[in-house]
Length: 221
Ligand code: GTP
Ligand code: MG
Image (tube, rainbow, N blue to C red; front, side, top):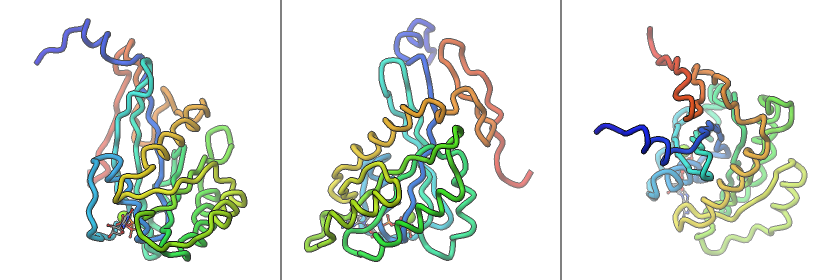
């Protein structure tokens, strides 16, 4: 099908931004389930451990002028992947740290995940990467983590906000990602607009057409 120029102009926003967000936290807290719920609208109760990292993308019409191509990097939580997964942090402009409301130890591990992130990356203007905390699995009955304990961890770690979520019930996930996108959009310099990312992708302005795309496969050549 041929796309007419006029259609292209009328239907496509002027600006396209690439935002990279990380989803981190202890194993089994529901990171993959959250990403899957947000990007595919699906949930499965089977636990399939993430090996290394997974990657998903969602394209969002942010306003009439702007499309966001959101990259979500779902980082394995299991300790055995600890050293290899940190390489995926680079160029992230936001992070969701997830814990499991039914396992309090996963809340106390949030400090570790935040310190690790802060040690490894910051925004191009040297400011800390904004973080939202997700208290996941709210559908499970009988969880009793007091909200002031969660609020204290947020305060101590410079976490912008926290949301009670359920990937199973699809509760608050979109709200949480929207909040993080709002912060990332406010941090103008974090967008990497018109700067190549590590794969050589240069973002495009639809008025000018695609500027460049030097994407090279990461495999054996
Ligand atoms: P790793 O990949 O090992 O780091 O784990 P993960 O954080 O990606 O966990 P994952 O998303 O695979 O979820 C672990 C288990 O928790 C799975 O059985 C999910 O179905 C379940 N789960 C995830 N989110 C929820 C939720 O909101 N409610 C309930 N009841 N179960 C959930
Ligand atoms: Mg996973």
